Image: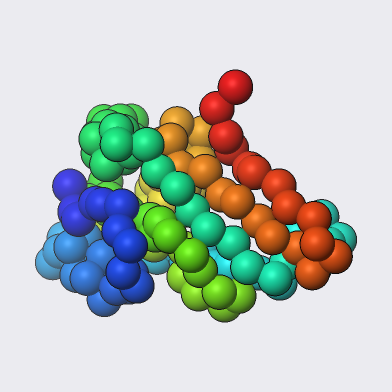
Length: 138
């Protein structure tokens, strides 16, 4: 398994990528989740991610589950918390495997499971003055 973590500082694509590189890997996939300027046809001014104290452990469990379910060499993921501006990287996911199909499938599984299971919540502020929480519990 590669690097994982929930961080307040900017994320390093190079760090996540390096943690999954291997001489046996014929396919390496990197996915970046980036803060966009429009969500559901509303212009986004800014957002902030918050995480439960168990987020890092849950992220590790997600990576372990993907590693068990797919024929990968390594998987890795990091996620930002705190305030982010439009265009900033919010999450980095990487997967390596002997072949590209497995690497793509594993990377997709990591981001899908991360979004479904890891207790990280997004608070969006819109240009029209509205706001919303995405992924909040309850």
